[in-house]
Amino acid sequence: MAAPGSPSVPPGDPVSRALDAVLARFAGAAHGLARRVGLAGDDVDDLLQEVRIRLWRALGTPERIREARALYVQRTVASAALDLLRRRRARRKQPLDDADEPTAPHAADRDADRAEFDAAVDRALESLAESRRVVVRLYLTGHGREEIAEMLGWSEPKTRNLLYRGLADLREALERAGITPRSGA
Image (cartoon, rainbow, N blue to C red; front, side, top):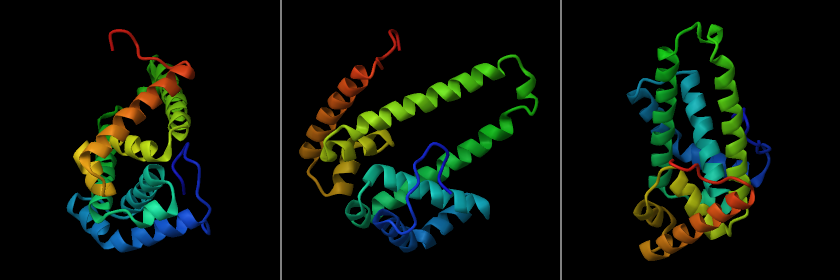
């Protein structure tokens, strides 16, 4: 099942087959990490699905997915596991009667605004040249320049150049879409 708000990849699609192959290669390591951090059952399935989505969004093409370096996939698994644990912890801290509070509609508005913003960023990212799009997606998912250069097999100066130009292009695309930084933010 795809994550809410994510387009799905048809099962017979070349991208889906590439994702299946990469996940099969690293399933043992992913299950081991999941056990070490206390995930089991459905949580492991959720983790693998999240990794699948992240790889698909960051790499996009079957070729790039198949060529993903082990370090990149391992870090993606670790990052997705941490996010899953954080969401679980946040759910435990949230009082059960939140829906009765007068601020609940504001939370729904924030969620809708966030989903709209995420969709606008995805559209803006799609407008970037592929080499810049890949670097910017990796950067936005929390990877540093040196790490991105290593994952993609590029030099650090090439990666830095593509990242800075890609971020500038992304900023311009968002501004054209009417999304600008808040003053004081």
